[in-house]
Picture 1 (cartoon, rainbow, N blue to C red):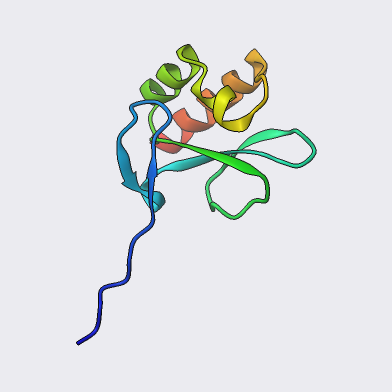
Picture 2: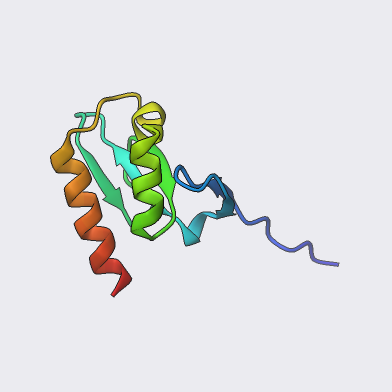
Length: 91
């Protein structure tokens, strides 16, 4: 009997729901301190996960959950860039 492969679960920083890792988008802080979206989930650095919708990003921003997870302050321009990238991926 073959065991089904275990699917990695992660928690969304916005809505706090546990979902499959592949359903979420990773926000990563690189070793150089640069913050970006990681659609592949393979970039090196510290990561936090959010659902692929702007509402979750706004909730995470309001509660400063991404800043806590990534252990750094996130400038407004980065949030604007993340919102823009998320809105493009929703289309």
